[in-house]
Amino acid sequence: MESGMFEGMSETAMLRIMIGAAGLVLIAAIWFASRRKPAQGRRHGSSSKTAELPNRRQEPTLREILEADAGSGDPAAAGIEQTELEMLEATLAGEPVPDRKPAPAPLPGARPHDNFDKVVTLLLAARAGQMLHGPDLVVAAEKAGLIYGHMNIFHRLVDNHPEQGPVFSVANLVKPGSFDMANIQELRTPGISFFMALPGPLPALDAWEAMLPTAQRMAELLDAVLLDDERNALGRQRIAHIREELRHYDRKQQKWDLRTTR
Image (cartoon, rainbow, N blue to C red; front, side, top):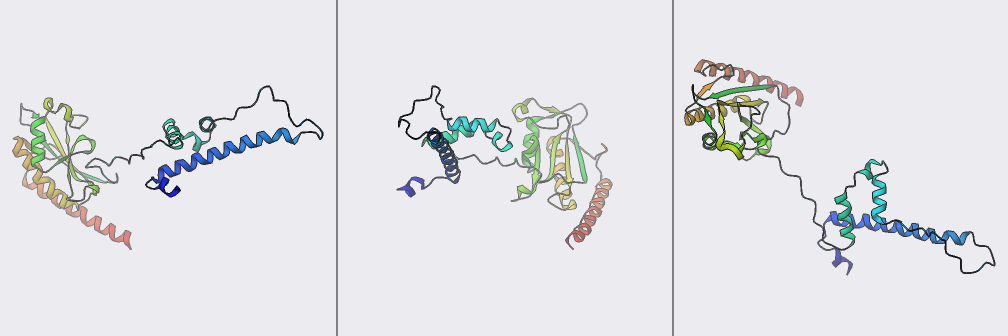
C-alpha cells in the first residue's frame, strides 16, 4: 500500500514530505510536553481535574515555525522563500507539486571561460555614403554559416560541439554591439566587427582560416569593404602577416601545454 503511494514520486517531492513530517513531529513533541508540564507540579491528594488556565497557549503552525526561523538571522533558514513554503504545504496536503525546472541552457556562443590573452579583429564597413541594413545582415550571416546567440550577436561554432564556445563572433560596430532582432528591420549600421578571442576551441591559425573566408563572403554579399583592426584595407601582405603572428602564437601555446602536462 505504502509503496504504491510513493511509486513514481520524484526525489524532490519525497524530500519535501520528509521535511514536512519532521516539522509535524516537532510540533507534536512541543504539544505533548506542554500537556505534561502541569502534572509535574501536582500535589498528592489534589483534585484529578485541574482548572483550565485563562490564557491557554496555542501551538504554532508549521508555517509560523518556518517563517520565524526564516527571520531569526540563520542564513540557512533565511533562504526559505515564500514559494518553497507554499510548495511544502501543498505536498503535505496531498496536492500535486511540479518538480523544479532545470536551469536554462546557455545560449549558443557562450564561452565556457573568460581566460583569453589575445583578440584578432577584422572590420566590415559599408561603402562611403551607405549603411548596412539589418535584414541584409541577418541573411548574409545565415548564408555564411553564423548562428545568432549569446550577447545577441552572431557566432561561428565548432561542428557538433557548441559547448566549447565560439570560434569567432560578429558584433555591431554601433554600441552596445548587439543586434536587436525585435527591431532588426530598422537597424542601420556603418559596419560590423569580426573578432576571435584566443585561446579558443580551435588553434589560432585554424580559427583564422575559418574567420577570414566568412568575412570575405559577407563582404561580397553586403557589397562592403573588409578592413584590418587599424581600419586599413585588408590586403595580401596584411593577411600573411596575421597568419605568421598566429603561427607563432600556436607554437607558444603548444610549449605552454607541454610544460603544464609534465
